Length: 406
Ligand SMILES: *Cc1c(COP(=O)(O)O)cnc(C)c1O
Image 1 (cartoon, protein in one colour):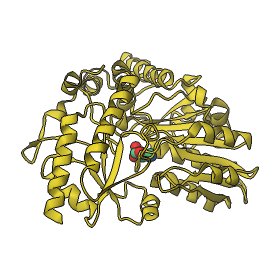
Image 2 (cartoon, helix red, strand yellow; image 1 turned 60 degrees about the vertical axis):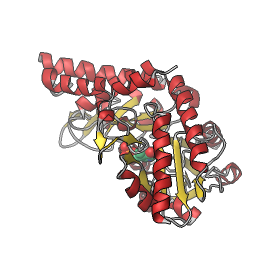
Image 3 (cartoon, protein in one colour; image 1 turned 180 degrees about the vertical axis):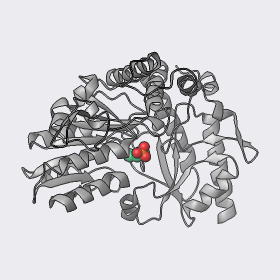
């Protein structure tokens, strides 16, 4: 069981007030808050061993290199990747996706097909459109139904020997839908296609087992897992990472350089050109330790309880509609809603005056909003440090906004 009051004291920001009210932070799907241990790790790095890695023989450089490589190992163990060198540090999910999309440029030919899902974040759609423009490959979309769930029968029909890559998020940031990625991966592999999973929204809520999933690529961002912004990971199976060409040229990614030819460094350095976010990588490792100490089972159970409570309470408000799957178990941590006749932005602004942080808009998932023919939603997204009292405050605030606006 989680001692929530104790957990909350780990997060200094949760003590602050906004507009004279205690902060109620329900925008965790955009970024999570940062516990003191992670803040301390950042301060410790810059106070005590800030140095460039892999290059210097001096003590500070070696301390920084060791800490950075230890973080990579922690991340490997957490996600259960087979090798540490299958974990590439990136600046975040978006960077990881672009790295893979760019790498596939040299592997695709005209008429090949890429399948993406209708539930994607913009960052997941644009790189594939660009890849198709570059290569003449064709983009196919797995549609969703009224519950915001992917239609698997259509997916099966879309798959063919032309399919080279399938790209799906593990959990939708707009609706909270948990996609059946194990089935999606297995079916794609039957056709010889590779699969890239966007785990930005899943990794903060469930423990991901990469070897069991057998995904070819998986991407995540530290800042949604209690870590800092500007750092994330691309996991790739060794064989795939060896097959993909490097993304950027620069220092650290080369073995030997002459003007005639450059040979590339081994994994993971081949994909890590230039000085990385050293401090961010180290702090990411600390954030993962922090979350594992709390326990992903504890996190999932508690968040599901809060999600259920919030769903019931919000649905008591007349005219309020929640988008996405309604069955608990098929979604996690996100409540995307509207009140009939009221613009989501107006609700968001009024409840911010009461100290409540939610997201309003299309959540970088315009196609989903178009599907429901709405301009956007109000999205409350939950983390393990939220409480039932905070949900009650959200409900009171939304009721008040409704009275003011209707
Ligand atoms: C947040 C998010 C992204 C983008 O992550 P960045 O850290 O901004 O690169 C991509 N996909 C999903 C599902 C997300 O939730």
